[in-house]
Length: 220
Image 1 (cartoon, rainbow, N blue to C red):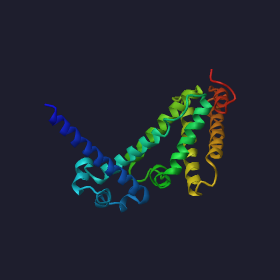
Image 2: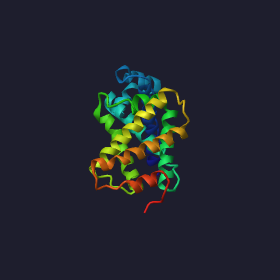
Image 3: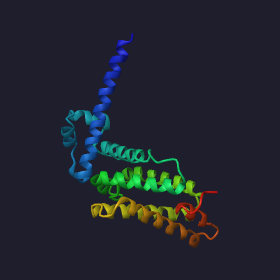
């Protein structure tokens, strides 16, 4: 009775390995080339996988592209796993450091797939938008501010856009500036964005959040 499940497990493991190999290959090819210049045949050949299996697992070229985007977003999220249990300012700095380090180690991928703009596929872009939203909510919680307040949401999105643009420009000059220096700049940039919230909503007090972010005080 135990042999069929064992065979199924081995078969499932091979299928999972083949599927992941296709995803990894697609990530590499889409990172190096525009979407229209990557063919399913090229993905299959480079992955050394039968052409039909790509369609079996993903249905279409767009299907594997979306899966490549999801896999990339998950890999970026895993880069935050090592963030220490520390004060909010140190956690945010650690998160920014992990983010920049991942982007630098996957430069082509970051510039083309992560920071390249909405492009022609809103659903693919939404994968990273969801990750950005989750990061904003987590950061707001650490700083003791309401992530659902309209002014904070607008300023938060502005800060995210600034971080993305800074990351892209930093990568384009081939990491001329050290990660720690860029992180320090980004922290002060975010603090500056926070200070603009009262211009939109005078009832919101951001002084404590800014102090926490800059490491000047502990959260209440």
